[in-house]
Image (cartoon, rainbow, N blue to C red; front, side, top):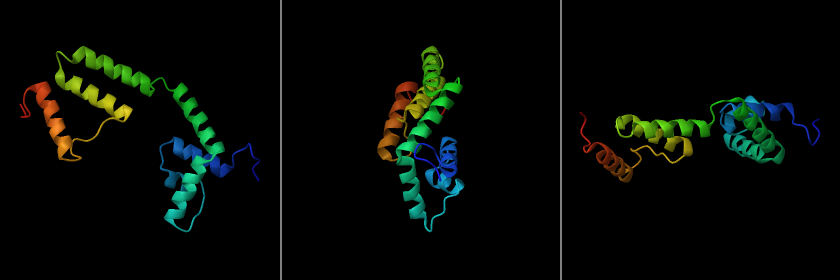
Length: 136
């Protein structure tokens, strides 16, 4: 039996799978937990992830991974910003892609096909940059 300050093998596996990008549901199942229904899997996985011990261990693991990685979100955003600044006056498509990628990284990007308002806003943005929405 695991002590209060130690993680069980299943908890460690759950954290590993979450840190690798799996959903809570899949990570819970891959860690070896069994539940009779998907609703129970989802609620149990959510409870597990919310526990102080597991969430702290996941945070520590993510910090270690980020420190090992030379490319973290901040550096990537800075690189895209530099690309945007250097290309905005001479290469507008590259500048647009740079802004789009920054928006995706900070969670501010929405696909332009998610409703008429977004399509209108997207077309207005393209018109502002290129002067037309027609393909050249």
